[in-house]
Amino acid sequence: MDHLRQVLLRWYEANGRSFPWRDEGRSPYELIVTEVLLQRTRAGVVGEFWGGFFQAYPDWCKLAAATQEELSFFLRPLGLWRRRADTLRHLAQVMVCRRGCWPKQRDDLEDLPGVGQYIANAALLLCHDERHPLLDTNMARLLERYFGSRKLADIRDDPYLQELAYRLVRCGEPKAVNWAVLDYAAMVCRPRNPECQDCQARGRCEYAMNT
Ligand code: SF4
Image 1 (tube, rainbow, N blue to C red):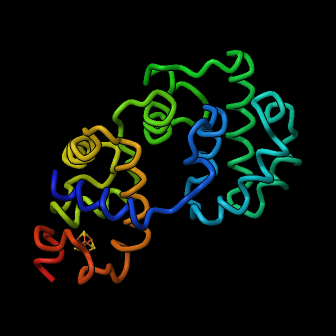
Image 2 (image 1 turned 180 degrees about the vertical axis):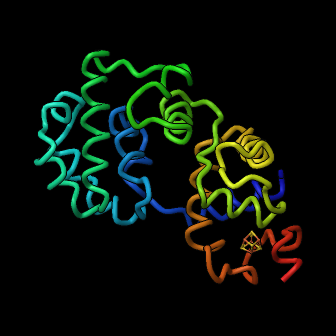
Image 3 (image 1 turned 180 degrees about the horizontal axis):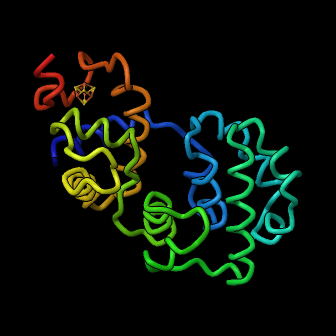
């Protein structure tokens, strides 16, 4: 695990992508809404849309006051606009009632509209600096290629994958490791044609050793 983490962090330092939501000092509002925007959407697409969105909706109050039609129209370039508009409006309405106070406990987080395991982990990692993995299909692919396949279909329920993901981010730079995985999975350990010949992890990677 240490070897894989070091490879990822070294690579990220030289090649990691820069996005506005990774800048220091972003508010919980910006961080969490961004995670909703990133769901099933390429980060580059969200990057182009990001500035305009937060200019139009700079806080929970503005977002809560938006109509479903207005927000759906605004979100069209990202796809899944109706579902996303619905989630964001309901979340914003709850957050206005909570006076913008973002919960610190997982159970309370997962009670919020549109917040499942992934966004709860993102909130604990990004807003509270806790060591949680952004375990999605990309992180799962990289971990499974390197260590071997999971047993259960659903990432959220698979104890083997969950354990690997938590071990990976158990270090002094959990945010950087998570972002390194996202970028590495998008640019090197891609779903198709991973660039194993250029990957510094190939010597210990199950996938590379068996193909
Ligand atoms: S060797 Fe290939 S499959 Fe293994 S981590 Fe690197 S890019 Fe991914």
